[in-house]
Length: 145
Length: 447
Ligand code: SF4
Ligand code: SF4
Ligand code: FES
Ligand code: FES
Image (cartoon, rainbow over all chains, first blue to last red; front, side, top):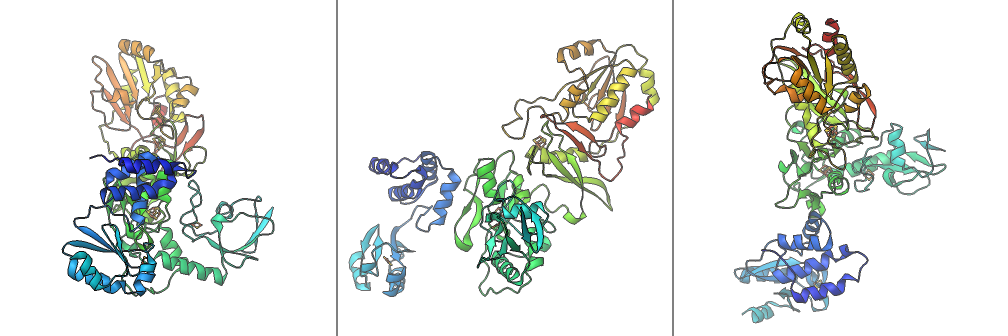
């Protein structure tokens, strides 16, 4: 069950490679690619990135555990990421999270994440990575039903 | 150049690291993350000092001394700073010194007694982390006792370059760990136990066996290979048991092992506890055997110069042909401390001009009638048919012999050995008499 980057990701990585003085700088982008590709970061992916960047396995693993947005286990359901950072919080993200938990947690894994850079549409969430902004309980139902 | 530390003049050079100046002059400076061989990391903030002319306290491990520097480590202000830092260090610490193996040699405990002594301000429960995690290589981790100084991590990343350890998570959830499915596994792994300033890393081999304040220490040299790493033998004699060696600890020698040991050498203390009692033979029986014409002796290349010299004179006086052979293991040595020559004093053998030609030894062995083995490993368990074998030994002998003399081991017979780089080093006996005679004394009796 070995890991390798998809062709599409490999092209992106190749173009990133000469952007920084040291390969080590690519740890985060590569982890993102790996997570997007497999929906989580597998041990094999860590091993592959470690070899590719010539950075010790433990170091990559440390980085993965430092950031809350990386996951080490495969999601069992579809994922809804609810932003819980300032703008979204002020615009009611807590209620959105509670509503999702109550009504959709059977079919979805609802998690809180940090700002996704869509503050102008707060409160927002991402379903399977796709952004949904200016959420209300009504728009949630519309999207999910 | 001179600087002022707590109003006393201290000699140093411009650009020296303040913490090193203080440690060299035996001045108290609390520190967790700085370690002589790992260098400074600046993460623990325990080494804060006050510097005249600077608004905020500075860390001594990142301050380079210059002319007219005035340092205070004892002002009320700096004590308060240390108290606050300790409070943060201990925020999630279980304070279980009573059952912790590090108690008595724990920096956190020491500093708490000096600067801490506050009531906990914590209103929320302490963060729970992993207890007794087996990292591998005899090393046990208690994540709750860790102060995150990263000494252990830096040891595996900068010194052994094996990178097994790291810090995972963040904030008050940060902890030392190995990656899942991986373990701490390198021939020097147990050094992290000694490096750890607190009771987070303990040795499976030592934990729960002894309280450190019941141990005596003696300065010695590891006899595991020709590197001759400097050690302390930690031992004691308790009411209900005979003297026992409990561990070897690294003793600093910047020319040889710095503050490290290999695990093989560290654990080789066990040989010193092998109690071996045989019916010791009489010296007069040996005198009788010495009348034979064809006599050969093989002496261990791990014996001290004093022992080798005595053996050499004995052989000369009694016309015994003397050899020594090194203990070579091609798989033992590495690029760092371990050497393929696993004898402690082969350079001593050479210095005394003792014959170590293996072929000549083979030929002589065939012809000899009497073979005297001075604690050489190769002859201990080898049957020599139709020869009269005499053993002077520190450990159990499995083969047939004619006579046997049990002699004191290197923990009970001080001496000098020469390491692989020609460095001459003394080691000392523990304070307890051995039940066994010293080799030199037996040979004296034979004169
Ligand atoms: S386990 Fe010990 S050496 Fe390692 S970071 Fe924690 S306190 Fe420091
Ligand atoms: S390197 Fe050799 S002398 Fe040093 S601790 Fe290991 S066995 Fe002993
Ligand atoms: S705060 Fe929610 S997207 Fe920025
Ligand atoms: S010893 Fe200076 S910050 Fe840790």
